[in-house]
Amino acid sequence: MNDLQPKFTKTIIKGRQTAGNIASQLKRAVKESLAGAEVIKHNFKGRNNYNTCFNIWDYCRKNIKYKRESENLQTAKTLPRIFFDKYGDCKHYTTFCCTMLKALNIPCQMRLISQNFYNSDPTHIYCVAFVNGEEIILDPCIKTFNSEAQYKYKFNLNL
Image (cartoon, one colour):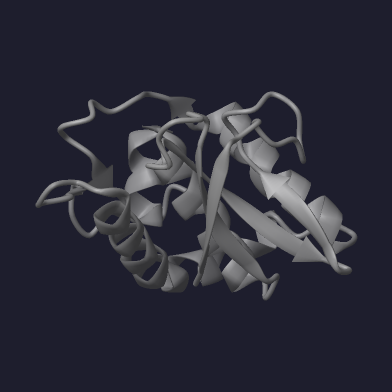
C-alpha cells in the first residue's frame, strides 16, 4: 500500500469551516481518491460485503492513528495522503471508508451527527454502508465494529 503517493499534502477547508463546507470537501476527496482505491481494493475484499466492511473498519482502527484537528483548522485528505500520514480524525476515517466502499461497489453515505440536544450543528462524521438492506456502521472512532455513537440529530449525505 506504500505505492500510493500523495498528490498534495492536504487541503485546508476555507471559509467558516461549517459542516457544509467540510462535507463538500470530503466528497471531493472521495472522488479524487477513487483511482488510488482501485489499485488496493482487493486487499480489503472479504468473503461477503459485511466482512469487507469489517476489513475496512479494522484497517483504520489498527493503522491510522486518531489525531484530532483544531476547530479552526480542519482539513480534507485524499486516500494517498491518509496512507502517507498514517493519522487522521473522523473526517479522514470517513474519506478512507467511503472511498474503499465505493471502489468495491458497496453503497454508502456519510453521516454527520450532533450529540448536543440544544444545537444541531454536527460535531462528528462517519461512514454508513448498506449491505442486504441493513445499515452497517463504519466508525473507527468507536472501538466496536458496526456500533454507532448516540446522537440527537443526524444528517445523511449521499456520495
